[in-house]
Length: 141
Length: 192
Image (tube, rainbow over all chains, first blue to last red; front, side, top):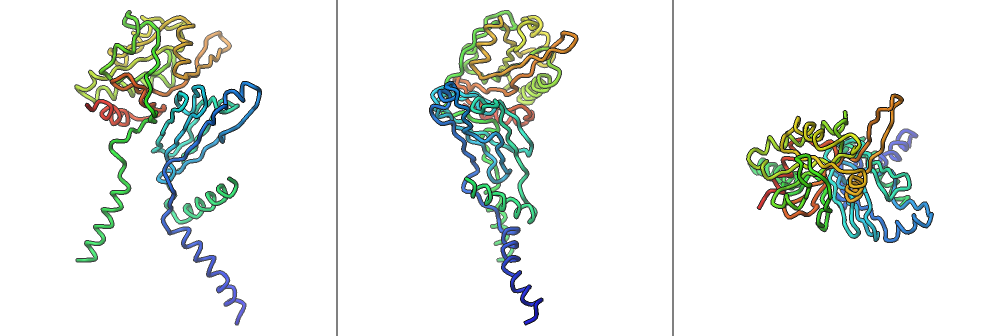
């Protein structure tokens, strides 16, 4: 068997995976991306704990996870994203435009939160990139 | 024929799943709905500003100031555009715009400023302590930036709260939404 043939045989599974990743429809369990402020966050911060309970940068993708679901489980109101949220309240915020959004957030030590909404991955390469990034980020969680 | 039928069925199924829910608000929805915090201020119409007096109407509540050159004119023009597009239903929508600059904004100044967008808009004015209390109730932040010549501007939260006809703080529209987005949501909130 020639070296070229062996190379082709070895490359076939990789091409098949790439083909699947680029052309199969993207699926997510829910459009909602949930973030919660745990109970006691305010008290911990008042005690001097520089607790970072939420990522300062949240990435969403149109058509996939394009709804931010914020939940305040703390005992006090929190300004979370564009709104004040009372204790026990949640905010369901849908996005329809790809852009970078800056919001105030009392749950962050910096007081700021950035939400990056990316366009829906339509082209095969964009789908591959989205899958790789999702896999990588889920691996870290 | 069968192939064409199958194609149409698939297309229909695809459109059905892609179509957005017409009953869903474009604004962020707060849940459970809680009573909108009351604010103790003076209205630009010379009367005490009492949100409870607008029960039966949808109230769009936002914060800003009359010297704002960037965010406020766009927000107010958008809200005026939405009321215009609503036609008769506009009578059931009240815009309340509370100043974050009580040192410069009095009732007369707010009335003139808001009136240039829509004469039905009501401004909220008061002392620094009253404005601070109103801002705190709605989680509104504002930061004063002073220029070298002593003049200043104020960076402030730019979301618009939507208070339903029963006085519940129902939703919040982040800055940047269009007239059509507001019309869409107001039509839902005005439904019996």
